[in-house]
Image 1 (cartoon, one colour):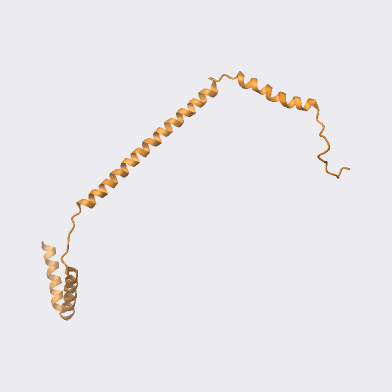
Image 2 (cartoon, helix red, strand yellow; image 1 turned 90 degrees about the horizontal axis):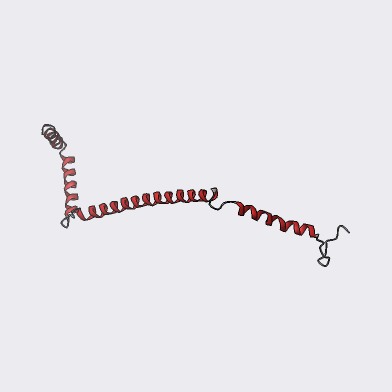
Length: 130
């Protein structure tokens, strides 16, 4: 009947030696933990790790404070630039007038290329000798 599954009605057989052996092992390990000095190497190791973490946190806080101050300074500089920039109001129709002037100059250069060449040479001579 090896192929038949065990039914829940059959009671499990346990030996008292196995159950007492399992409970005895944790009891033996507890005195080992108590025998260690709580202020020994484990305590000093934890304290050194804690102090290292605290110093790392302090350094990170200082870096974040410096970065926040730098960002605040940049924001202040940008706000100051925005307020100090002069606002120039162009008269109405100025853009259209400039476009018309450029169109007239282009037409004049197309009709009088020699005069345009003379003007260009004159401007270059003035720029060189001034």
